[in-house]
Image 1: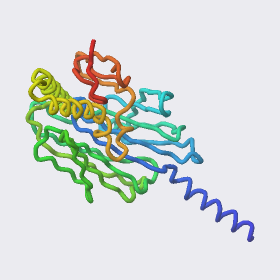
Image 2: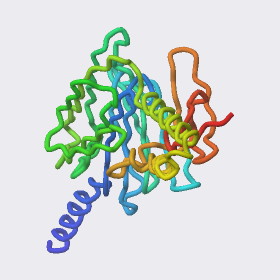
Image 3: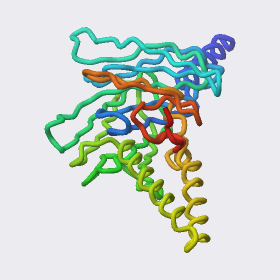
Image 4: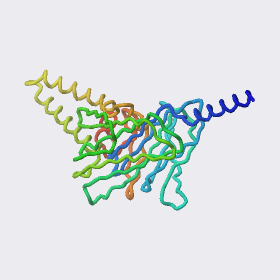
Length: 290
């Protein structure tokens, strides 16, 4: 009888711990960052003793593409994932096996009416496992007006380029529940954050050129401005990567368009995939020379 009780105790204990296979989770929301829609990313840090395990993630119905990035450093690989429908075809979801300690899941969806300046994002986060002590990070669109989110207990960070981040810690989310992440703002320009940041780099470069032409009069000031400019280019990747969001910007980003797909090139400085039309790399700030 005692042996039976011990067996049941350890069986229950094993089941409880097995239901929490994640060491850490960061959910990132990127409204109109490099695309006219919304990028959602999940940085998953798994308990290596629980691998592999099944992971199911609900998706917005407008989702067109989902990508899995696994591995570390030069060994990273990107896989386009199959998107499934529920029985009545009203919802979409991902169903995959997590086989790596570090996994990055990303998907794009576009809930916006392009004829309107008003933007509303509603994403119901729901998985097949219980989540504990995880983070949600929302990047504020750099050109947004009246930016609001329904997250509570927000930590806010702003960098010198005017990019803001809002982070909220969620104590728990049971597998039987869903969490609504809601974002509202107005985008009068209808441009992406990356497009606006690229324009800022162009302005900086012109200022450096002006400084060079007048260096006989302002040699010390020009040298200081140039150093600041080049330092900013080296720091831009880190300035856009607060609170471990660095992994959210993946090694290669797949874009989708309803028509006329953009052409891409590889940045000669950081090896990231960028738009061919970008004058400067949005990741490292390097000049895109064709």
